[in-house]
Structure formats: structure tokens, C-alpha cells
Length: 80
Image 1 (tube, one colour):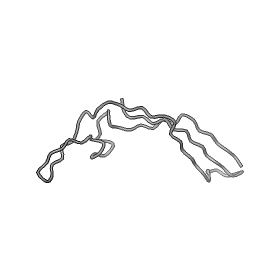
Image 2 (cartoon, helix red, strand yellow):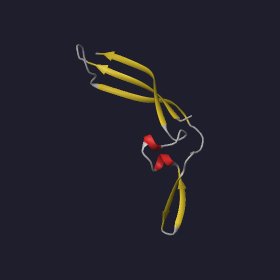
Image 3 (cartoon, helix red, strand yellow):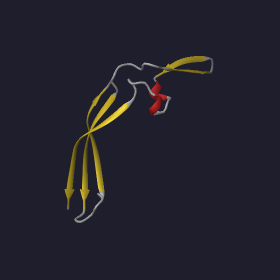
Image 4 (cartoon, helix red, strand yellow):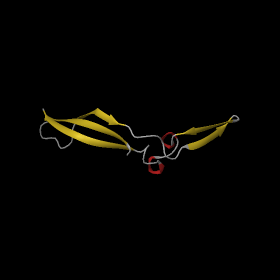
């Protein structure tokens, strides 16, 4: 299971407009997964450290525990 953010979106439209002039996003919940499955080894200055792959790799190369998913739970459209 990956990190999952539940987000509420509020879009404000002018009358007759096709695109919103304001979009607000609010995080309403966050579920964390477990530890990194494939930590990355970093060496420098005579030291070695293990970092979570999410801190060093692009999203498509991250393990399932580090990958982030956003779920839109509510979209409100306001016409002014």
C-alpha cells in the first residue's frame, strides 16, 4: 500500500465560463504505508547512509511503500 492523500477540490467559476478562475485544494486525510522496501545507499565524506527511495528516485522508480497516490474525494463547483 502506498502513501495516499484524500483531497477535496473547490472550483469557482464566473457565469458562462468554461474554465474555473479559482481552484482550491484541501487535504482531508493521509494514510501512510510501511517502511521503504528498496532503500538507496548514499556514500559521501567517508560515511554511508540508507535513504528511502522516495527521497532520491523519480516517482516511476519508487517502491510501492513510498509511491504517493492522490484520491479526489469531493469536487464542488461554485458559480458566481
